[in-house]
Image 1: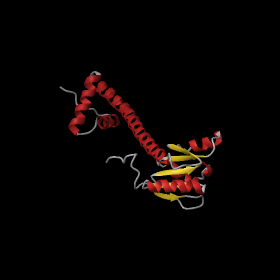
Image 2: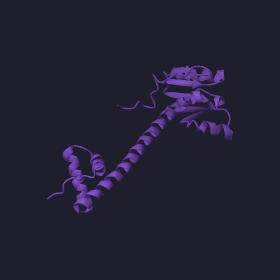
Image 3: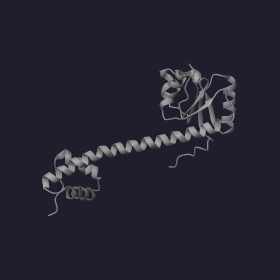
Image 4: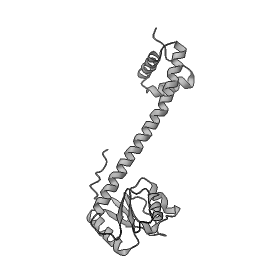
Length: 195
């Protein structure tokens, strides 16, 4: 399944937490023009269960724990900055915003901020997935190495031959090298050496 384009925003849902009525009106009008379904949030009110993007005013920070989970669920966050004090910026950075807008808001720049947020969020998620796969491969390599050493010891063969035995066993059993290696190290068994 292909991911949606960062440039196509129609049909997406936005959770908007903005205090100033003028800023809220500008954002709401612009998002509706872009075909985005807008839901407003205020402290003490219910939380939209699903949003594709969140726009949050720095005046709502720090967040309480009842809403904080929404901002750490992999949804891109666009921060609205009213002041540039280090303490305010630190609170915003804890949300890991994908983009930002400077208040007072104008309609110009909102589309760019949304596209940047979706694109950065997509790239960040891809990198996290790649890191996870590499970490898994690294863990698997340790198992493969242990199995190769065990086969080398049991059959008195060199490393290339031991690995070839494991690879052949994996192909014969239609399993991955990592799965066969895990079986070898867990059971202490070994594939047969070529005679």
